Image (spheres, protein in one colour):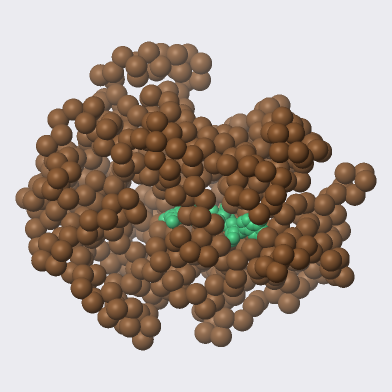
Length: 541
Ligand SMILES: Cc1cc2nc3c(=O)[nH]c(=O)nc-3n(C[C@H](O)[C@H](O)[C@H](O)COP(=O)(O)OP(=O)(O)OC[C@H]3O[C@@H](n4cnc5c(N)ncnc54)[C@H](O)[C@@H]3O)c2cc1C
């Protein structure tokens, strides 16, 4: 079916980025904008508003249910790669943690030939998106926060375990810099990150379309049409190879064509956007021929260069009275949900993450020949370390939980009367890269995703060293050493590990996605053969 309306811009994907782009375009009242989202409006989906209900969105109809192919470096396990399928997308299911990265990261983007993406401009836009509500006593860096943006952010009320672990991070050489995750200048320290939560409700990309403080949740822009429940299957071109619209598939399997005068914007996420480009004939020609699609543009980078942050959860049993496990055990979850429904308060009005830290591992890594050999080469070639980083960029992040809250392959909550917390280790700037490809030319088929996690041995070395340091922080740090009763579950025995080989095995068996895929539509100048879009986000021809 041909839809009769003609729009100026069509924005595909109503997740995190899509609504922001659509709302900014709609500020010009003379433009007509269409936003297309495959999932439904999230206004009545409680688990996208109640932060503590986040994991209840997984595995069902509101999850894209992607998986990554098995790989020996992660024990041949298939990894579940959940993404939100509703208005707000993954911002409506994520951990709410506002960690911006380092200013150097964005300056690197700009230096790679992407004008306008350096830290100075990026911080202006980050701040513009936010209204920050700090707490008394928190040392705010107001140059790194906004006061008038649509996303209201606030701080987390910390449980006792968080204060104790903070002392341990400080004791182990990571000084407290309260607002370091907004400022982006501290590569070695610990601090508190703001959460995309306000007055007990999660903030999502959808806040660009509705005023978050409006109890009636009315749409803001009269010139912005929203379509839910339709999946974009391809971009449409005219004979002169000009983009003229998109085709969607409705829930009743009907094909609908929408037309536009100016541009189509794909904001379908790191798995969805390359898939739509490939289905439209834009991508590596050999991959397209493989699935019977005639290439329109041979663009080798589409779907390649896939990166993610890996996490390993390392659980410890704690003495009673410091974690929040008691608020979730037995029938407490139902009571907590009733409290949230009544007053938007209680333990389900916030996430379970505690304190955060960044660190570099140079000293530890200098003990290894593999590192030193690569360091010599990378310093000559780029002036950077083998992970591509400068001394003002951390190798890893640590973040902690305030109770037993685990990825699905751990299913061992402590029984009533016992409690546990995790120190989570997250690897930055991995050298291992993966890809997204089409399985078939049928838009309804899921894409093939291979992350190749830890396939580069240096990633494993850095990660194992980080896990070893993580254990030292918890077991020797002055805030936590007297609180830990052992590993949780006890048979994990990681509190007795004394070699990197043991950590490597633990990583292979347990490392999992931090849900941060990126890189599949790489931004870069024409001279970069792997780039998919230019600095104005227009695909290369
Ligand atoms: C469980 C989880 C925890 C996370 N924790 C954090 C965190 O604490 N802090 C943080 O900064 N980041 C976190 N992230 C990552 C962050 O949420 C994502 O990087 C970000 O939301 C991605 O935004 P996006 O707009 O690219 O994609 P998404 O927000 O995923 O949006 C893509 C949208 O496009 C829609 N879509 C896809 N394909 C189609 C199609 N063909 N047709 C129509 N619509 C389509 C989807 O339904 C979705 O709404 C987490 C992510 C997850 C999943």
